[in-house]
Amino acid sequence: MNRMFVAVIPPESVIEDLDEFLSVRREAAAFRWATAEQLHLTLAFAEHVPDRSLDEAIERLETAAGRRTPFALTVTGGGAFPNVAEGKVLYAGLETDAAEELDRVAAGSRNALVKAGIEVDGGRFRPHLTLARTGQPVELSNWVRLLDAYRGPSWTVSSFALVRSRLGEGPRKRPVYETVAAFPFGHSAI
Figure (cartoon, rainbow, N blue to C red):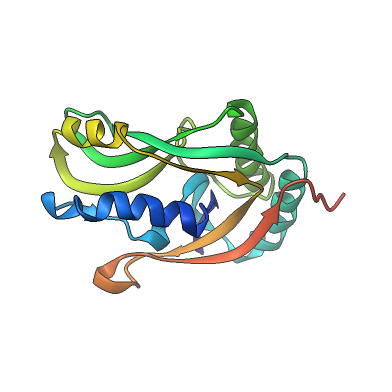
């Protein structure tokens, strides 16, 4: 079994800009901060992907990506899950003029996995980049206000990736992410 997700991976320049903004602020809180290599926009998550389903999932994801068109995305603002008063996850927000296309990309990713016989976890799609986890519920309104002052560089989203997540195998027991395949938009196998 594989733990996997489909994600948009921001380019290095976008991650570096966000990392620079956060670097001087991280010491102010004892959160479990995501590393630069862990920053991504999750489109679909599947905790248990059987090896036998992997080839079909890749084929279906390639078809789904081929039906999509590139769009601009910007990291800006932020929030907390489940809410700012009792936050356990601090995240950076995402902005696009192509919200419907982003929703289609997420829905197509989820549908591709389901059609390959893979159970997809999670609820409604809420685009964000997870920045930190708190462990215990924490009042995060000051952090969200700080993120509201941030606006990173825009980039063109033109692909997504299927990523394997190996829990606890990285430094300090962090997960290790391995890109299994990348899927460019507008290049369907059909």
